[in-house]
Image (cartoon, rainbow, N blue to C red; front, top):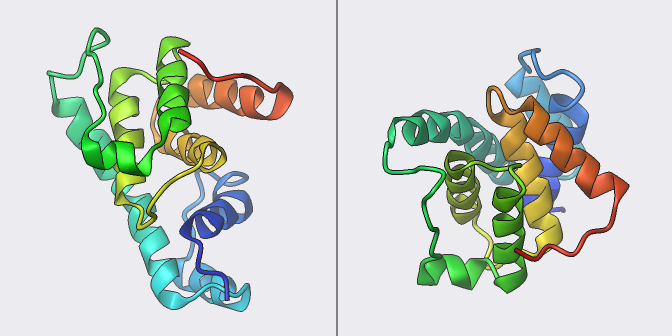
Length: 159
């Protein structure tokens, strides 16, 4: 049985969200399909909860006036435990190139911290960033830029 939440999120993204972003999905039907694919009900519920939290994160961050383009982000100890130096560099890279703004940076970091995974590798973070941008209104260009970056060229993510 596959219990990796990132694998589950990618499966959901690739099979249900990416091709039909405007179409509401039937949660019970998708749940059953995911069970048939080998995912457990608790993991499926966590994945749905995580996806739903992206919209509430958007609302919260949009209201926070302290997050500006000039903000300097320092990772907390718990964030550093989960996100190694390469992941931190990738986040800085996304922000420095304009793919992430300060608000989306915080949504990405908060979303990663919500995942019940001890540490995230850069490849997983890339996929999570793609899902986060996909879920955010008005971020179509940033999503397309990141998608192109990830699939069209190998890059060294240094800030």
